[in-house]
Length: 448
Ligand SMILES: [Zn+2]
Image 1 (cartoon, rainbow, N blue to C red):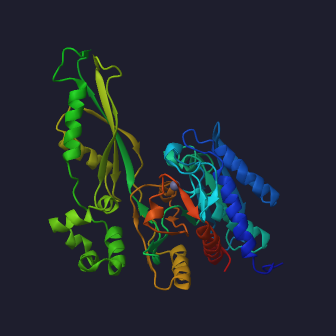
Image 2: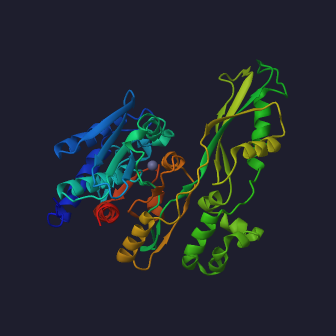
Image 3: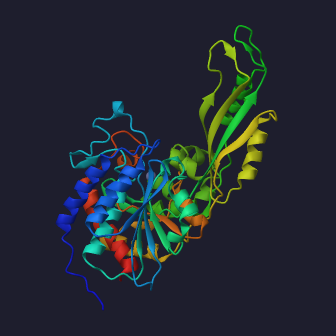
């Protein structure tokens, strides 16, 4: 028997519900480490239970929880996974003007660590599932809600675990909707819809120098610490070559018309424009732009002696390397060896994903987002930025399941600074808008 949609949803009531749920969700401290995402999974489970929606929690390690829900469709379309990570990064309350886990609603914003990354999206995804269930909407494809642990530390206990241990639950998915990518606002006006189809790959390295230990009162030129400092100096002096991958070339061309006068023509063909050193200097002043056109290296962790008067036998540094799509980690390691010019240094990868290819640049999901953009913001450009960070999308892309980053929040530069920043918050208006847009996207994909 065919079921028809029972009237249209009461959006006003749903908006208030979403705002209050997000406020409660932000009060759950899922700082990773240690994560404690099980508390967030139980929060979601209690809501699904109340709604009569079956959900399963998977505990990947003590305190590390993942939650899985599947609304069944008739199978005429492939399932969509609504993915959200439930962990957040550390919030140092000394630098916040509100308690980071208060979920307080103030000045038109819902405040709390995770509001923007990505508990806000988690609530939009929850609301979509609740609306589909309450309206008894017949689905063509299944809708899977997947709340996961550990994204902020690499995803081993979250998506990594679900793919390793429970892939049977998700292998039939046709597409994943994940974080990053948003509706970008410039000078109060929506400029573009960004859908992330590719990201850089982390290739984190530990460099270890060894040397004869001794007493700090008798310096040795060849100590482990001195050797390490020398090679690190070469690394920070080194400029990785500029490489404009097609996604980046297209992204800047798509948005060229919004750029200030002298930039406009150049951005239409970034690759050629970057032949000019003066333009390179200008362009790379923006740290994100710089990271979009080269492999990057940040020296972040240092370890030497733990006593000031002891020359240690070993000193090490960890460096955060991010590779552009299509790069070969082995070749990059060779590049680093050439730069440091010291064979006695041990270099060991500590986090290295196999670089994955981008999700298809044209797909039904992108088409649907284009339609939504046209409907709500007719002048906005729909484009595909390269993500310079990384998300859990690579796990799915590696399995051949296309994964896209798109969060239907309208964000300006000052909002983007809140990712992992102080005073993280999302506007109430964005939550009101976001639940409608996400619901419409999912409906167009699995209902219409
Ligand atoms: Zn995130």
